[in-house]
Amino acid sequence: MPEPNPRLISLLRSAENILIFTGAGISTASGIPDFRGPHGIWKTRRPVDYHDFMSSQEARVESWDFKLEAWEKVRSAQPSSTHEAIVTLEHAGKLLSVITQNIDGLHSKAGTSPEKLIEIHGTNAEIECQTCGERSKPERHFEYFVKTRQPPICHCGGYLKSATISFGQNLVKEDLDRAMNLATRTDLVVALGSTLGVYPAASLPLIATEREVPYVIINQGSTEHDQHPSVTLRLEGTVDDLFAPACIKACKF
Image (tube, rainbow, N blue to C red; front, side, top):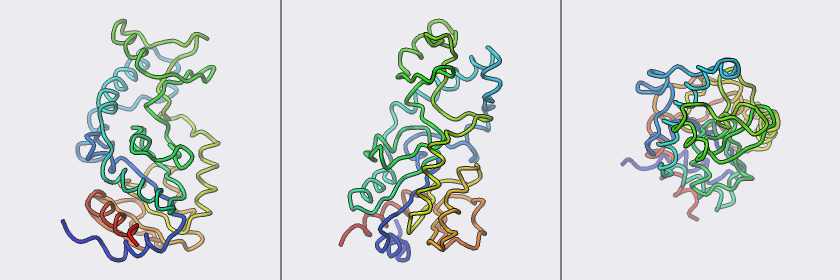
């Protein structure tokens, strides 16, 4: 493994309020496939639109089928060295917040504090009623679906869906507002494992750069921000190889 990038170490070491923005690329080492890569989920699966989910029994069955398949992977997955390195930043008092596009719950499993974490696209760890908003754990709902092949219904009569943001569904306003506020308070923003192509989430690192805050991108493959003039450091490769070792070195004084 190559030596950690000295400029990255320096940026991490000098920052006091680091904003980490993460995408699917930080979880592939944990056995969870990404969405848009060469072997990504959307190569073989059609995402279920939120409006279709709400209007079509067939779409709801398709959605629950997909989530059942994903749940089997997610519940056995363990955090990667990048998830753990981010926790190291928090313990060193350097972490402002983690804004993640991921729905796998691995930041929480690694030990990132709830108050430091914004799951901007929701989480697979809970099921949410689309009428009353009540949340519950997924296990019994998946058991019901496996037995009956019928999408579960809430006690209020509303449709139950994973607490994730589907295509065509609005982000949670409180989460987006909080993320935008944090982007104005950071002194270093680091995007990890994201193609930075899904908006409005991908606009959050750019909000920080309006104050000329250093912006680091680490990803295996191109991103939509690669040519943005605000990018301070762009590293090509896996986040486990490039970010995690640099993070550990930066936190050693």
